[in-house]
Image (cartoon, rainbow over all chains, first blue to last red; front, side, top):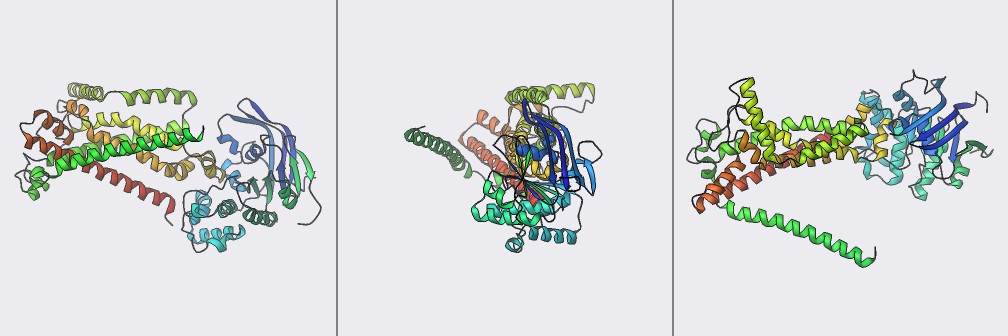
Length: 239
Length: 293
């Protein structure tokens, strides 16, 4: 993969959690507007690796890392650890969806509006439009449009996860990180999320941690195996 | 654990719950039975017309009204003094303190929580003497000194419950707002504190209860048998727990003792009202922080 195709470049990445050397000299590139699946045995640092792409690990006591991570943000290559690029802005551009659906204990509307409000958007009209767009992009609008002020925790597991995806999408990120997004969902909810993933790659670069090889075959354009970071092209079939 | 042991454990747990609930209901029922009969306007206002007493036009000499007002002011003032400091310290302990500082402070707060209240009362008394000697001879054991001493007494409860409520938030929830671009203070004020309000409320209820019942502290710091409705923070005052203590140790006949039961029931109702107010405030704050469209 050449520089023009790449969206993310990781060079010489080492990650330590307390005394454990979790990631060792990882060198890997990720293609833009593609779904890359991160696979490998449990405990090999796949989720941790996602946290290095938005610097979320910095909020975990006992964690440290060294190495370089460059991402194209706003059309320019940015070394996200070199300083000068605010971490809050980075996290708005590199969205993360956690393994377990984790809606905040507030209404559906407030959940999706939450990141926009954090970023200082107060215009009610703009908020309403962006909420609707994000919920539509996450295939959730039709199911919740009449109950936006209900507690988000009353949604089903699959709906909650799509709400979390909508909450990440509302900021219009450039990269979307997903940590086993279907691990706690049933088959029907998983199918919806997979369809959603394939649709999202037209707009975003998607990295998804998955333990399900069938799922990887269905949705991924490339596969990175952990802990070594070997890149495997998945398939040439159009998706 | 085999099935029999598990069932036995569940049975013992149920029994403990039932016994404790039974004791609680027995106490309340006993108090209600003894005290309800004597609660009337005369017990509260004595011979003073209620309206005149409520408008503070006439002093109540032989009723509980001054003690009720004194207790209410004492609890509110203590809570107002203790909550900001306690909550701020709890937030610091949970979110900002390093491991070594946290270990040290946890030990200090645990020791503080175990200090007998009579020692806190003595500390308050010493403070009053110190202030009287070095700052102003107007300062003496008074409502403010009592409130300060009680605030000091309940601080560890508020600190520890705030800390526990914040530390109990799951790791992914803690990271959710940060992953969406929140700063640490935004995460604290928009997610962590609103989610901890229930836990914090437990600390507040414990603190209200402790402030309302403690007699040892106020005996040394400003409460008297007869002072009327407090008109100044720097004056002596009356309080229900001291009245109950005084009447139960000095009563001249069964009728006077029954007035003590009436005062106990009123104290219980006052505490329940304050608990309910705290619950409503928590509910309102949760709505404003999390659900308001």
